[in-house]
Length: 147
Image 1 (tube, rainbow, N blue to C red):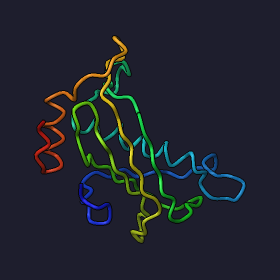
Image 2: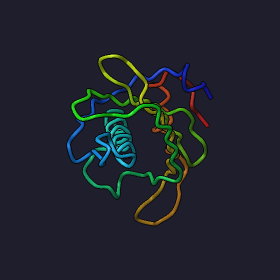
Image 3: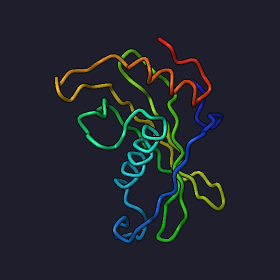
Image 4: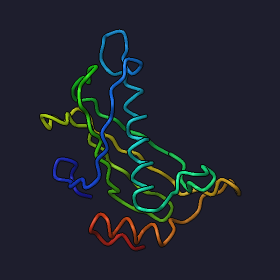
């Protein structure tokens, strides 16, 4: 796995910081970072044609593990973007990495890692990572992620 500081992120989304994201210390509450990463992950999957955004029963992923490193506070009005990449694909899981950055300065505000397990919501069972997911993610990321 490529160390986070050397990783290439090809996919970013902008995040609007809202008043409701703030905590009493006037910076973004720690729980909101997970929401930002979730939105980036969903848009990543949609962009690659792996989810159409219509039925969550067709999402094929459930979250198993989350890690966030908070490096600098995010404040109201700050322009922020979230980078997302698939760093590793296992038999039944995909590890996503995230960079939350100040859009103007490029300052790294937080990093994150989420392990998503491929899952069939109708049968309530884990499933192997679909071959087309491997192919599409590998092609987008520019790496061979075949099993």
